[in-house]
Length: 284
Ligand code: SAM
Image (cartoon, rainbow, N blue to C red; front, side, top):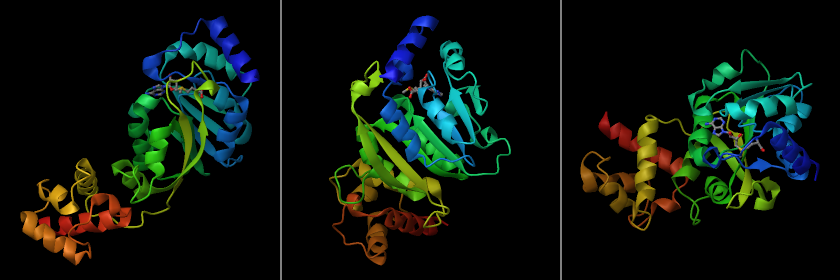
C-alpha cells in the first residue's frame, strides 16, 4: 500500500509521534483517499478547505482535482513533514491555525468560484467543526467529512429512526445529508478504536424554513431530544421555553396539527422550525 509506506517514511524521517489528543489517525489507504476526494465532486473551478491535512495524504488527492486547496493544520510539529509531502504543488496553501478560531470566509481570499470542504476530521471536535462550517460558510456547496461511524449515522438519520436527534435536525436545516461509505480502522495509522464513515452534506442554497430565532430553534430541538422517551408536550412543558406553560403548549401543538402524544423524534426538521417560530411569536 503506497500510502502506508509513504506515511511511515515521513513519520520516520521527521520523527513524528502521532498525538492522540489531536485525533491524529492518518489515512493510509490510497483507494479510500481517492474515494473521499471524488465524493467532493471537485473540478478546477473549486476551492477546497481541508481541516487537519496531517501528513498531506488527502491534500494531495484534493490538489490533483481542485483549483485551490486551503489546508488548516493546528499542529506545528507536523508542518515540516507536511511541507515535504506537498512540495511541488503550487495550488495548496497551508494555514497553521486552530480551525475553531478561523474566520472561514477570510480563508477564501476573494475566490469567486464554488467552495467545498473535504476533511478527515479530528473526531474530538466533529460536531463543533461541522456546525461552524454550516453556520459560517454559506458560500460552500458541498461538505464531505470522514467521521466516527455513529456520528455519520446521527447526521444522516431521518425522523422516527433510533439515530435521529438534535444533530440530525441541526444538519438538515442547512444541508441534505447522506452517509456514503464506511471505513474500517485498518485503513489508518495508527488505527482508531472506532469504525469511521464518510458523510456528504449538500448544502441548501437557502434554508427551507426561515427561522425567527435560531437559538430558540436549537433550544426547542435540544429540549425535545433531551428526554426522548417523553412526549413532546412533557419534554417541552418542563423546559421553560414556552410562555404560558403546559396549557399554552397544548394549544400550540394542536394549532401545528401535532397529536398530544407525539414524541420529538417523530417531527421533521421543518415541523421543528415551524414550532420554534410559533413559540417565538408568543414571546414577542
Ligand atoms: N488529513 C490527514 C489524513 O487524512 O491522514 C490527517 C487527519 S487526522 C484524523 C486529523 C488532523 O487534524 C490531524 O492532522 C490533527 O493535527 C488536525 N487537527 C486536530 N485538531 C485540529 C484543529 N482544532 N484545527 C486544525 N487541525 C486540527
